[in-house]
Image (cartoon, rainbow, N blue to C red; front, side, top):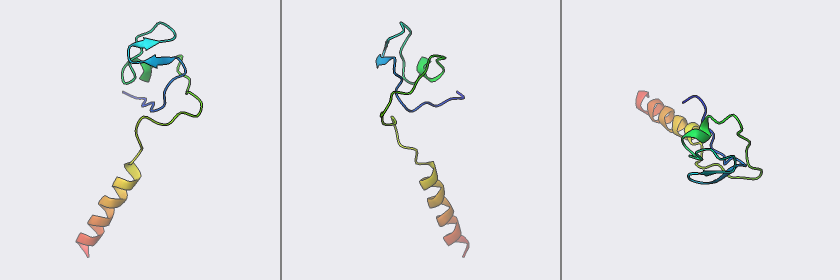
Length: 66
């Protein structure tokens, strides 16, 4: 899956219901929908922790090497 949209769409009502009459699956059809518009002032569905995890791994490797 190329796109990962972590914010709710304006048209998303709940799982299985879309305001446009589409499937309305947050991790399915909503990820690639052409009518996607981010809902204003919405929180992401999950936090992006990639940077923290990479820092922790590199710190462990640095400590291990020295």
